[in-house]
Image (cartoon, rainbow, N blue to C red; front, side, top):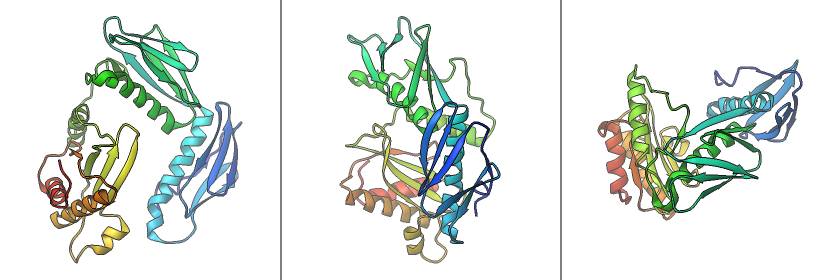
Length: 296
């Protein structure tokens, strides 16, 4: 069982919860939403708390146990307090205004950039440069904020990402650990790397014991293909002593992601090392993917 999955979800006063087949419906002061959760997990409501339980003792359900609990907890928090993302427009003369369900940006182009606000999202603009995105769905709020930033910087092929900045303009990332340093490198790389439908992004991540690869279309926000050392099909095909923590396991992930990508008609990708140095298991995945037929 998951350590996160075993935590109780407290249902605040004024919030109603209904558990239906494969989903939880919640309603509160900020609105209502229906949150689906993975199969193999059930929720029970007792004494003002929601409890996530697995339907069986299979170890594979552990990874979905914590995920399901987090998704439902986010839904409860969303209808109670809501979520928000703040963005600042940085640039002389750059501004935005709200017209109905559209945000109109003036960013120095020959024309205005128009962004349509999706259902379930509210946008407030303060002093023409400060944008606040709010809603009850945490994933949707974050995605809309990212889409606004992407939409405003990709118009007419413009690649300068300084116009719209998520967070406060005075925030500075402090580097205190190796993880912070890797994350800063990753953010810097992601400013230059973007996956499209024609040429998606091959993102590789490694932990101490496992390695993960995903082929992502950033424009639609979809993962097209994935492979990892915790994937049951991949794990079962690995030989004795081969794991996600060594080079042979990384090579197997590279071959698998290449095979699955080619099966879906994907041959050209851009490689994203996620801030890691290009050596060891990261390089092994890249080399195996190239040998498997991917071009990058």
